[in-house]
Image 1 (tube, rainbow, N blue to C red):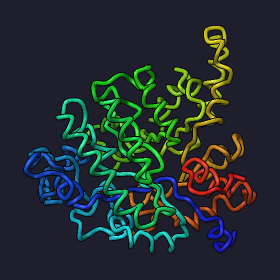
Image 2: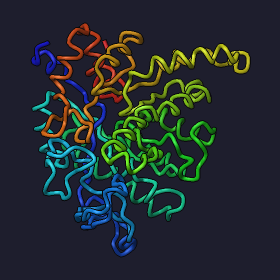
Image 3: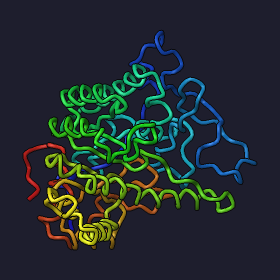
Length: 411
């Protein structure tokens, strides 16, 4: 398929990440009020979370690291792997080593034009992967709220404000306080955010699990605001690392592979607990989780639905799990080839979104240490035989509809 044809489809990249700048919170929160609790960056030689005991004989290099008070959260550049010359979990150590297009919104637009991407859905790193370390009901609620609002303001000011039709911000939430959550949803909708981020494992914060009716307040507010709920992998709890003797690279790859299926629990909760039934106008997106597993999972759900006679227990549930999914749940794919094609063939194109995961370790960013294809080459090589109307849904129409980017239909 000619790349000029793909560019004409105005590709919407359904999952990319912001490499948060060092002053994101320090420039937006009161130093007098919160002091060193404000998330900040300093050089530190604490081992990475992915370094195993077998590696600790070597000297640990200093790296730019996010801190809250005296507690290290994560290596600030660990996710900025696009074009990096070493394989994951090795990563840039300092901000001056990363691709500036990972963090600069003006330069990112140039990257998008180069890749043939019209718009990007924006996710954080800290706000997903280590949020439990600095937010939640154990923290001062006002402090945590201000952290959330600072991030949402940053995205609105620096990214959405620069290109509102190209940068689709996903807002973080003070979900431990439902009244504050309702207010933040309304505030972020007015700021131009297009969707909301939530975890599939709120119990990790000492809160009710996702299938509890406690969260109906959140679902209702999101439905009223027409803002889809996005479940990004890693937003709950990472799988445990394997034994040190396995090797750092093997353990990291194993953990990453497990994460692909971590959202299965969330998809099941949405359906079997009746969330989709009670909130039929609310869309949900499973992010960075792939799609190849979905046909098998949904076939299993339908089988158990009948075999356990759920219609007898819940006569008000008018749809099968696969039908609830088709109505309001979506999955994102990027590197999959035969499994993605199989899922599209079995389920059709209406529930899938294309992503690049830029600039993460698994992103569609070719480089010296990555086997990834560039987005346009991946689409041409893998999806080149998909009929143009279906391809347009996968690359543009579905995401445009979900995130209200424009009035383009999925057809």
